[in-house]
Image 1 (cartoon, rainbow, N blue to C red):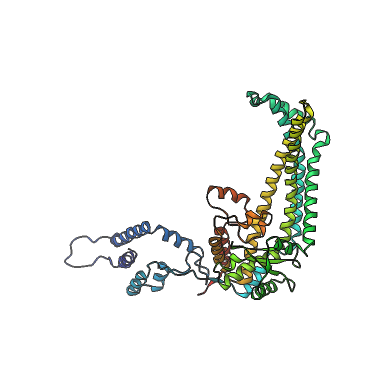
Image 2 (cartoon, rainbow, N blue to C red):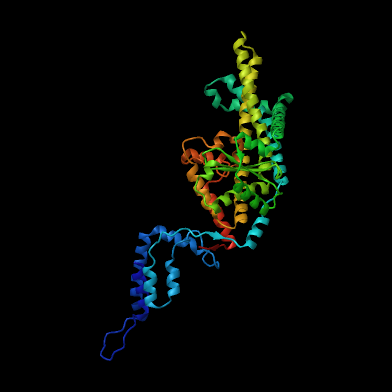
Length: 477
């Protein structure tokens, strides 16, 4: 169809009136006569587009980038373009036929994209550096804002639960008078005579305790990185793998001797970086990753991604934010413990006094308040973690100069899925450190995406392609 369309389009200028002395009939206007084969060509084009809608969508995706010199867009890599072939063929019909005949879709491999050393340097210098003081400071302000918000929130929930319990499960719950009285009681005593400030105290104490436990845990084995690897049962990596990491670390500007390299005995294809700073940092890969069939270039890209986390200061900043979020979970845990204690006292007590009832209401208020601020804090933490993943992917592209990470992510996602629990599910406190979280698909997976520590593989691959689009990357065989 495409060949016939181009032939008809080329024949359109030939449809001219022929002057003859014997011809008495009026000649058709040149424009109208020429439009007949053009209309036929247009009809054939429309039929071809209906038959191949997917090819049309791919061709359109290349238009915006096709004018960039030397750039091969992701949608056009590894396949010929009819329009480009015909344009080169020019007005010669024989070349036009050959171009149209060769326009059948070919299943060619995706051509890798590369960056020049100058482009790699510019991209690496644009990446954020450790230790992310500004990000940690902003996270601290948000932690304080949520902690302060938990004080009036706990008080409001206390009055709401108390009013609801007084009327019971009846139609009175829907009357405006009930909620007006609850609002009036809250405005008259928004802090429960100072007792509501205990919510902020519980959050602060929980974060401080988590920080001290983390410091003691890391100090006992020589750093947070070594402690994380020990929690997974990691062992020292072979010499060739350690040499790879050392070479990439030197290219990223990390101190000599860092990071250390470990292999974790797990069948899941994954890798992670850990450490509060570059000096105590480690890069660990699972045995499943080494057995996932990655090429040398793809393995370097995965290692470069983890080194990018260390260079950008993601590992230390991520742990500090996790310590802050732990304070919100402390408020939830405190409310659950208070509820359990009040329930036991109510069962053992013979009298149904108001003190036990007030303790139950207070416990319920702390549970709801703690759950809400913990959910908001977790959403913030996961959003920051997803942004760190994109930045680490950029660092990997800058260190390797290729799009090998895009291919490696696809292989890791394919090799890491299964029926068993993933590393992120077994140790969720380290979820932000992995290269892949292996999210489940479907409706439940979409809901979990809000609390996911990693973007989806498709989103990361699209972001990598945009890096080369902005840099004008070259497709090389």
